[in-house]
Image 1 (cartoon, rainbow, N blue to C red):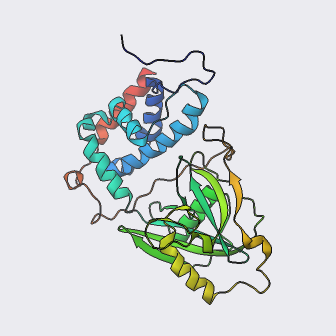
Image 2: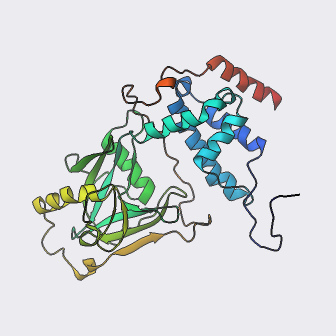
Image 3: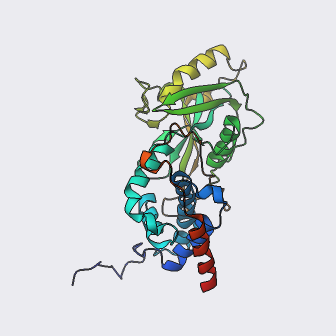
Length: 323
């Protein structure tokens, strides 16, 4: 009979077990049922809740039980729709809903920061968690009704552990539109090289480094690019022309150019991508983003969708009664 072959002599358990029903029930109750009613009014918002549930599953359940399988967000969403009573009626539409959500998600405005050292010759870049990830400026999507500078402060703090609030000038920013998504990065200049950096989220950032600007200047300003040193970059090139102009208009204080700025420096690196990362013990989970612009939201077939709130509340009461 065909089946999964498990090497029982290996000291490393294979992560092949799907989350059991009790974990899925807990995730559904925690992130879907026990939320304000307005968070259940659209597929977009329910999927942001599922993203939080997915992060929680990966950061807690998988780490505590090495045999549990690490899931992609689409795999996780499918399990939640199949196992959560409030979502199960819509399982046949999952592919369309998921496609609409991903389209919508990439239109939510993004904010972050370009952090420069004291010589203005190097900038801080962060590398994504997954193998082969690109380097980028620390940034992230705005939450509902969040101002750009507040989002930048929150995202930079989450991805680097660095508080930019006292250095942020509201007028010093570069803004571009990439594939219908507005991206604003504030320029934070004069940060000391020996500043301690470390992400406050798990499994999102694998490395933080100072990189010379003249080594990351690509030949084009495409969203995905390669630096002059071959570095794989994402959402970096479109900002470099504006950054060079800002530095020319706002040169660093005299005497800041030193030999120490002649090379890039890694300031934080994950120990391994197996889960034993040197990240903060108490990670800050991201707040779901929502632009609430009805004119740009995708999925015309689901535009007027509303969750059946009474049925969801009934499912919640039944779940608690069964405990």
